[in-house]
Image (cartoon, rainbow over all chains, first blue to last red; front, top):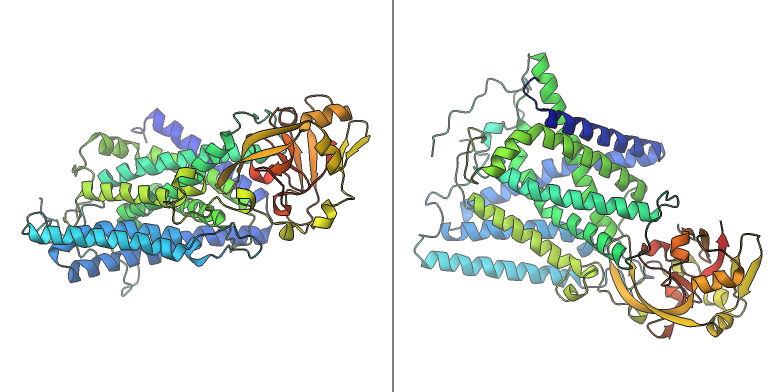
Length: 154
Length: 402
């Protein structure tokens, strides 16, 4: 590892130290059942992202590339990133899972309506941009090939 | 555009045939490149850094044991740091999703089977990434669920969120150390630069690299605007996903109701007194009407919850220091604030001497001009500057010298 600079070695050592301190905090302050639950959530987050969220994104992008007209692909991709992340973020509010019947000040909005409002605005913007791109004759419609079917090596 | 070289299959892992596991080379989008990952990663790293520092502040503010006393001013300090904590964590959600998308092919990176040393290095690096991703997802997920008070787990939120924060930041620093040369090249080079790209990452798609980055910043901005109204008053009408409108009885939201804490109006009735117990164990007692006879002060102070929401209000009551003087408690004395609440944590909290002596610290009897409602802590509650909401003891029954 002669090529590794002192800065990087020091940074790596510092990171390791900080991480080990965290692991000590994690393991020393709770009982086994609680630790098991934390372990499940730590591993579960990775599994759900890598196995479900990432695959769903791959599938939806492939589907969009196949079904959407060329002029709509770029606006749709933008809309997908925005709505995808906002929707994931909105799940705890949309489900109102933490709502308490003795506290009307918590989760006190109509989240379904709010989320729908964002969806309507984004979809409208995607449609307008798509129509404008189609009218401008495809010049602004991105690459002519437009195939973005990732993960399809055929 | 250079043509894509044929994917190399020679170094694939010796997994049984038939498993549909892709290789790194199956991912062809040129968006999944270090140039994109480093740019999104920079902002993700900044938001994690802000989260970590503000989180440390919040954790320390809630600690009973404070070698260096947490300051009682500025009175809006905790409101700002905890608001920032939740805002930067929320901003990190779209950033993390795009970042993970950009580096997803690395999950299928082949192991250098056979070369023990190379396997060890690759294995260690991948282990540090696994810890970083697990910790990063865990922090954002548990933080998000905590803002919405949804706890579908059996671990204790605060110590776990705190410990995993250290683990995650440690793994992040290791990751930066490992990737530093690539990060430096990517951030100083052009966004279209392909020097560090995987050989197969050549396909153009619907979005350009700049397009994806701008989209990511837009998604991040929308995520913040949609939620920050819980703590930023002028965003209230925009933040359609905020966990609080900021409204509530007497114009202020509540976190724990009297019903949940099992406190009734009768307990705060005629028989109620506030007892201030001094260092000699002698108690001085005030009924609510006694307290109303003392000099009344009005302070504008926020309730700033650890869950990130906050609301400013006008509190009227007796300056705590006035009561301590009457009971013969010297300045600089740490106190124990005891609530009537029978359930949940924080029924007994510590109030450091500098908070007890602060001019703005009140035993509040009124909120926004009306007698405190039971849910806001009737007959009397603590309200102090720059203090986490969970420590603003409601249904106060005694104040004791520790």
